[in-house]
Length: 144
Image (cartoon, rainbow, N blue to C red; front, top):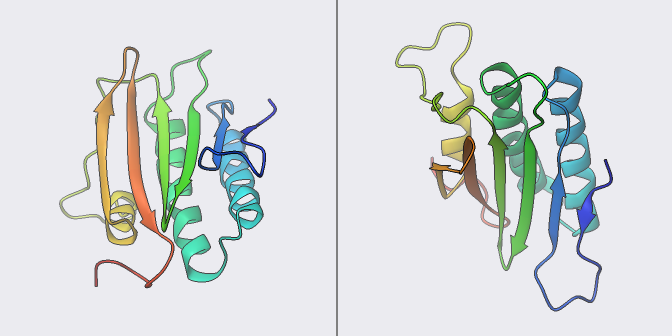
């Protein structure tokens, strides 16, 4: 399970891809490796914390709600200019994420992602879906 990392000095934007198992351990690994990669890209402080949370919430959802036995989920990140795009894909296309109307003990994850990202959404894949978000690297929280 070696991350696909674009070498420094490459003409392409820095990219990171990982396919961890659809388990709580896999979700934790995705967050930890994303945090490490963000540091490698020079992303620190509030921007790094926001991007880590934007990875952690959909990774947790992919494990809890998008899991198909025997199928992994995928994390992809790309840094372009002053943003990091985060994509998490799972195999359950019929289970679209919806923020809870009145969250009690849960349901805040998508609201958190929407607050930290400048844009976010869900797109279909041939198998499953991808939850994506664009996180700004400067200027603090985009929506207050």
